[in-house]
Length: 328
Figure 1 (cartoon, rainbow, N blue to C red):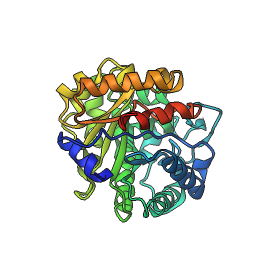
Figure 2 (cartoon, rainbow, N blue to C red):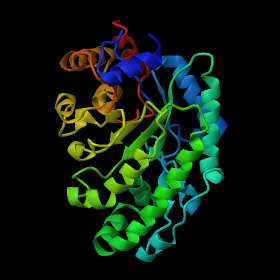
Figure 3 (cartoon, one colour):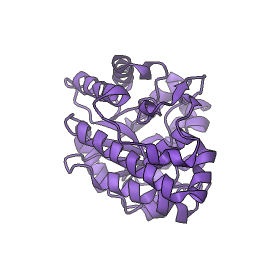
Figure 4 (tube, rainbow, N blue to C red):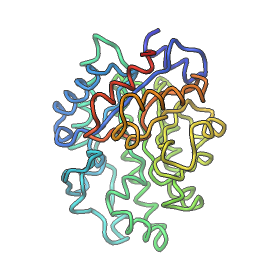
């Protein structure tokens, strides 16, 4: 069974030869150059042979060209710290304009995708590219505190900015359609009760998320939605027409078995990036993975961590994830 067939059967809830597995991580420093990001991504895939590849650019790549400044300060997830933001006053939301996806950082990211796809031609592997939601982009532009303040004091101005960010994202997706990818990995930060109320997310997040997910071409058969945070609003995002939903199930209020009752999607997760993959051992990882596989009856599951790997994760622990789905 090849990787595409295994994933398609998993999405359909059918029997497979084994449960698919995939892990991914950010590449701080290398994510500033297309060739270096592609090389790091390909070498990681060549080492572990995951069932799909998720290209992880800088977490600010979609909004860098609005003038923010960032740098990597040692964050273990590989995230860059914003040292100069683009939005401070609420009126500045109305000044945002959609970006040209073929120029600047967005154009560089397309080149990285092309290089990864070219590098996988001899051993075909589905490729997805990370796309951040408009509200996640907005938070990087202003910072979380200012964003929430503006949502609650100047909602119309924020929504004007979100419309521009949504259009910019749609233009990026339209450009990426020309590349041989299987779908996107769509990151939502704010469908999380620790940040916004359900009413606020339905007003400032869900309409834009729906517009983007519903715009994806039919030929993209592997679209994942990641809902970050400890209190994910799975019931709210359940209608989104993606194939897979991913959240930090081991570190949140909702475990995989509960999520399976809420969602019709395939599920992605089962392991904690901190407790199991970073701080655990190959033995404890195998034990946890076997427990999760048993709980879900080896159906509708892609074994993964709940978030991108930490850059200091032991290689032996990463290998254990790949080995356990092979029955080793």
